[in-house]
Image (cartoon, rainbow, N blue to C red; front, side, top):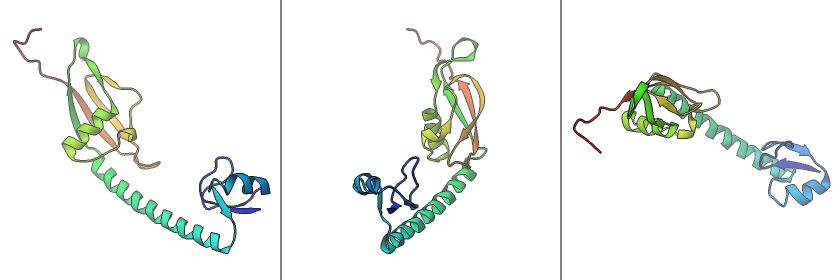
Length: 156
């Protein structure tokens, strides 16, 4: 039985692919779950139209990400945090903190999950942070972590 896949099915096929599958697999699993439809001329035309739209959306997204990467590349942000002895921070700076500061200081909205930190930053200093916008668009920003000014005369 030939089917056209509407969605990616792991280890079987990707969206838009036309493939020969076992009759029972197609009839009892793929078609009822709307993962695939029977391959005929009409189905093939529908899938081709969907693939064109998907390619167009990807091209638009790619252009937006390249523009954002140009704005991000070389951007320098400064974060202040409380630090103790030996320039160790009391807390840590996470990718969420970096995304928030990027939005505040530069007005650039970046999803915190795209900021690549191996581990949270726990020391004062300068860091180079990679932001993976897409698989191959990875701008780098500079992050400077400074110690917050201590207020005099404040006791617990």
